[in-house]
Length: 321
Image 1 (cartoon, rainbow, N blue to C red):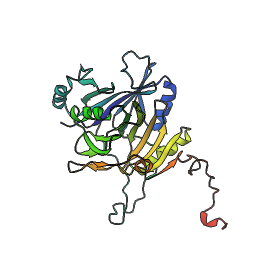
Image 2: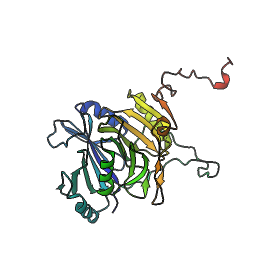
Image 3: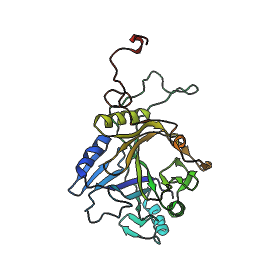
Image 4: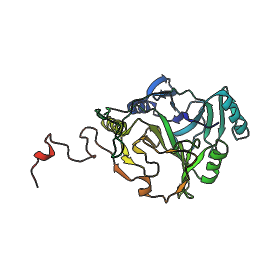
């Protein structure tokens, strides 16, 4: 009866023109466009809606626009959906819209459950050769000119009530805690078996609520790099990355989004089962990133931002200094 992941998110922004350009550069496919909304899809059909704040049916946001307005989670079939209806029907904001169930979480964010519209994919991805396991034989690793995200993998939200918000997702939607910053943050996955987290709730020292970032899964590290370089060439600002998270093991690249906060390319997160025991960490820069490049890599020079561009010579041709 587990939730399977994110099926759709809705963001709001007054600058739809800039958001249109951004998410096409990001690698999503624009499938529908009107004066009040843009609808994009990832490779597997996960939807990203960017709506103008004037759209009358838009759910309430957690903060001033641009921000996140709604998250729709997926289940496998109608029978499973009916079982979720019994669990959600007593929650604030409960309503049923056809085959979509809606309620509000403790922050007032609109959350829903529907039968998944995502498509199954069989995507070739890079094999990594290690000392003890060498699956890539007579084959070079791929390189990407840009990214094409597979799906929305997780969202990260600021909350004023970590315990209460986490309890809702655990008790009503069946999420499982993967790891914790005690009193400060919970990494939650949709089911006992799955990627490290589908939702991360953060309670900052100065309480607030809102969007921290939306994360998009890509195939491998090479696509993280190719996507980040493409965004740099298109003029979008990197906040941090590439880098690696020690808690989830994921490799990442964060870019500033005109639809609110940040968006992230990521790959190679830990896969967990019922045997996993949640760990506790102290928040801090070393817990967040094992290593990272602030400001990213310039898409043209392929060096760290503001570093000297290559001059065409091999390093061995350069005179010693």
